Length: 191
Image 1: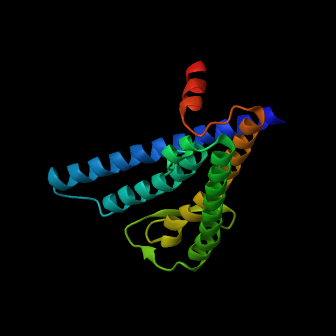
Image 2: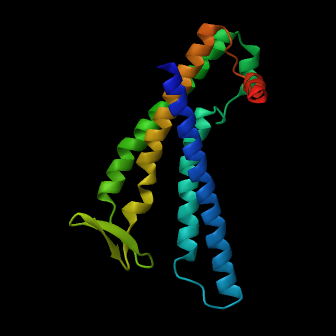
Image 3: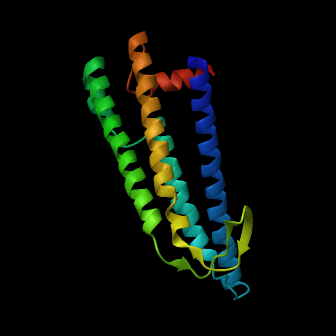
């Protein structure tokens, strides 16, 4: 059972990393295309800037879940090194629970924002599910599609926080818990 959970955790991290890399690539491609079309051909696309910004937003929100899982978020690591291991563990778990609650807030208010979001992007085409099939819509993508990343990211943050708590609890029980990155670096060097 534990191996299955570890496998799912690794698969989730690789998938999120892949999506982040894809959004980074898209962001660069859209920006370069927009710049070339604007300054070389003097005919910029109306959607260029919007897709660059949306790619950046989705990248940041997906990367948030990765930082929570890898414990790379803002932390005062120096303080943890001064504390006994169990005290550092308790404080770190408290902050991970706070981040979990942030994920819950993102889910609840993100779903509310998506369901009540009005307006459309006039410059964007999109696909919609109608009558049991995907239908191409040439203009006016609803803005709710752009902010749908908020509840998605909230869910991923909650999952990452739970995985981090479970991982740290197993490490504490096994006597190998350390808050600093030395243990992670040693483990990475072995793999």
